[in-house]
Length: 250
Image 1 (cartoon, rainbow, N blue to C red):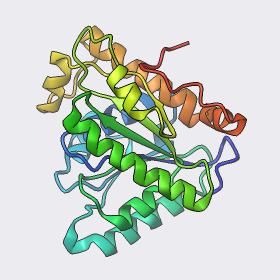
Image 2 (image 1 turned 90 degrees about the horizontal axis):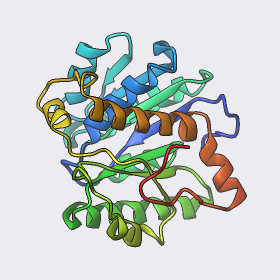
Image 3 (image 1 turned 45 degrees about the vertical axis):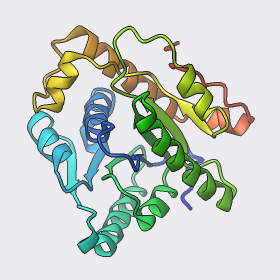
Image 4 (image 1 turned 120 degrees about the vertical axis):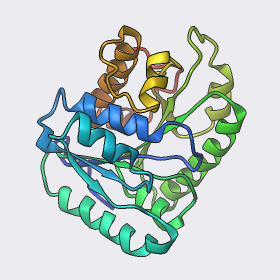
C-alpha cells in the first residue's frame, strides 16, 4: 500500500463507478482543467482507460499542456494494460505534489478494482435515480470491503452528485442510502444545458456562469480536501463531518 501521510506526496485519484453513463469522463476532464488553474500542468497526469477515448480527445483539444496517457482496459488487454497502468501510477508516486487522475470504464474488472483500492481517493459520480444509486452503493460496498481487508482509511471515497435537476434541494434519498457507508459527499453538479453541450463535444463551458460555478466549486473542493489532504484530518480524528449533501463551500 502507498504511503500518503506526507501532504506533499503524489496522489492518485480514480474516477470510478461500475455503472456507465454517470459522467466519469466529463468529471475527469473538468477536474483536470480545474486543477490546472491551481497546479503547474506538469504536476498533473491524466490516464484514460476507457476505450471510447473521450477524455483523451477532449483534453488534447482543450488543455494540451496536461500530460495524457491512453491505456484502454478491455477484456483482450486487461492484464497487460492494468500492469501498465500500475507502472504509470508507481512512476508518478515518486514525484512530489504530483496528481494522477484515472478515468475508468464501466464494468466490474476485479483486477482494476484491486488497483483502485490502492489509490488515495476515488471520486464516484452518480445521479439521484435509483438506477444509478443501487449499483453505486454496491460499488461502495466493494470498496469498503477492500479497506476493511487492509484495515486502512484509503482510498477516501467521495460521492459526486451529478446531472442533478436545477433547483434540487432534497438529497435525503442519497443521504439515507449512503448513511452507513464510509463516504464523503461532494458538491453537486447540476443538469445544465451547457453541461449537456459539453457531453456532446463542446468543451467551452467557461462562458456559462452556472456551469463555471458548479465546476469551480467542485475543483475547489477536490483541491482543498483531496490535493491538500484535508480528508486525512477528518479520518484521522475519527469524525467524518463532511457526510452531508451537498457539500457547502466554506
